[in-house]
Length: 471
Image 1 (cartoon, rainbow, N blue to C red):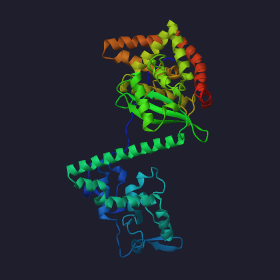
Image 2: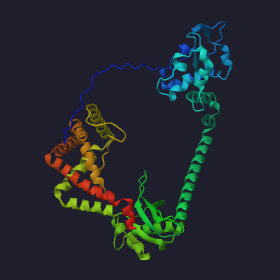
Image 3: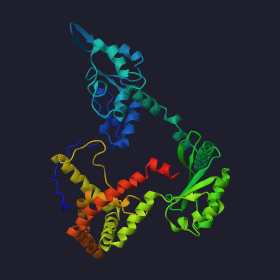
Image 4: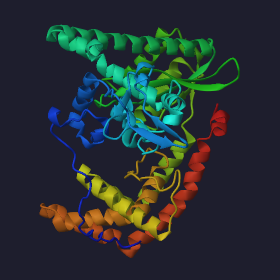
């Protein structure tokens, strides 16, 4: 295993980025577009105030008795104030100071759509090719999806803010606003419920009264309430095998009798006969697979044709876990892996330390040419803990552990050296010593090599062809 390393402190540097204007001062806003500051020199908190001021003020359209003349080719040319009267009147601005044309809407909003500095004639430097004026103006306006038109529409939205929904709501009393939100929430729930009902109806129609298999698993939501997901596997009229979720039901009692009643209730609600159940699919929990009182056994009592086939990939995972626990060295090895991952992932601060350190390592490897950058490469790795019932989880945990080994050691060392709790410092110091020992590193690479083979078998057992063979 590569030894961890501490990043070298970066040399101090001076921030030469321009300081943003943070206070809105209407007297500092210039009318002549050639004298204005860029809209992004204003802090985001006051930028809209600046925009609103210029929109209310309107474009700078000075009319001079004699505009300055510029020699272009063999002729003297100049700006023509009649151009204000064309379709450009809402956005065209003339700078007396610079004798150039600007676009008000693009000055205000262009950087919201375009981040580079390409084609800044109408926003920064100004346009002055008077011999190609009309065609150049039209080219700037562009088609319906051009940047100019989007900026122009956004300027119109700013002008008409009094007609916006938010302004209308703000004019209402708090009671009326609360009633609006309540109705909106109720309508959203109704829409979601209607979509769910129509989706399940389409699934039942696709099943067309034929035989089916029930698949049941637990499903916890963000509130950590125990829920049961019920799905159907069936062959439709076109001969295609489908798996479709038809219900997610909250359960307060996970006894097999209650689970069976809920499943049968869901089937009856959708006019599905229990006699049409020809297979069952569950995980390996005792209340599901028990030979005497498991859910599988209860359903078989009423529907003898509802055979239950335990997922082969799941059986493989449980077999691997059982074998591992028989060998005390390997069992202790996985206990250390689990505890180290729990410690490193115990807080947002520690996970951030891990992520930052790994980013530094990747940057150094990229600079040295040891690894290449590209789409799909060098993806961020998570702290996947091995789970007894999650197939492939042991392989993914060890694979990520090797890739993150230096960063994991870095976090443990930081806790050992800087932790305020003496118990934590001793524990993390012990873990750091363990993962750097030869025996641990040897087992890490040995078990990964073994699990690569079992992971390929697990993936093969989950392919569509193997699933169809079990039907």
